[in-house]
Image (tube, rainbow, N blue to C red; front, side, top):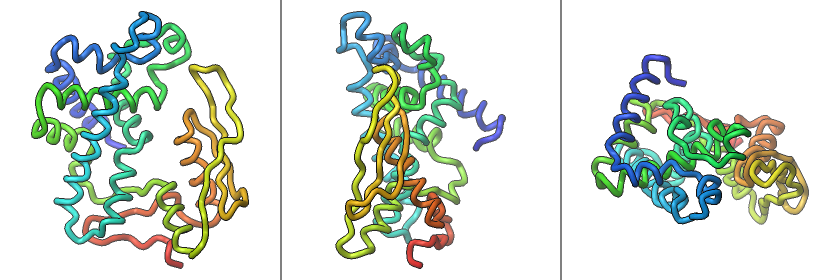
Length: 247
């Protein structure tokens, strides 16, 4: 977690980047679908920019890892990227730069804490990167992604629990990993999913989250912790730390 001084620096970089966008593009980047629905114009939401920004962020982070970790295998690079571009990571960054200030939300989302909801924050950050790419092009958005999303001294990177569990299961010939939604509670604008993790058809853990993806990650993490694994291997730039996958 960056310190107060680093957070102020990142916030200044983010605010400058936001203010560099032309007004229409800036407005769309931070317009949640709940606001668009209330206005009767779903095309004004940030969902399409979110789609583009997701690809832009993935490529920028992937290129950085490829260039800076020449000894790391393709599988390990994939796991590192997955962690860095995960919804949880993006939401944490969005919260640290106070992205919520810029959001346009529907009344329901506004009164139920939408400005702090991880899924909305992560999606808006992706949309912002999509908008920044449209206006400034690849080289500028790549530099911005490295400044905002990657620590200046990236020596340790956590691996997301779903990817780690998938690799553990795949190491056992014939084993199969599945996630099944077993319940959804709460209102439409703020659901909570309950997901069961199954290995070879048997339920081994349960997870909860504001989306199916978050619930799956929680279920995977719960299995890893209960079975004595760390919930994410740590990768050091100079030496890849061993996890318990191969034990």
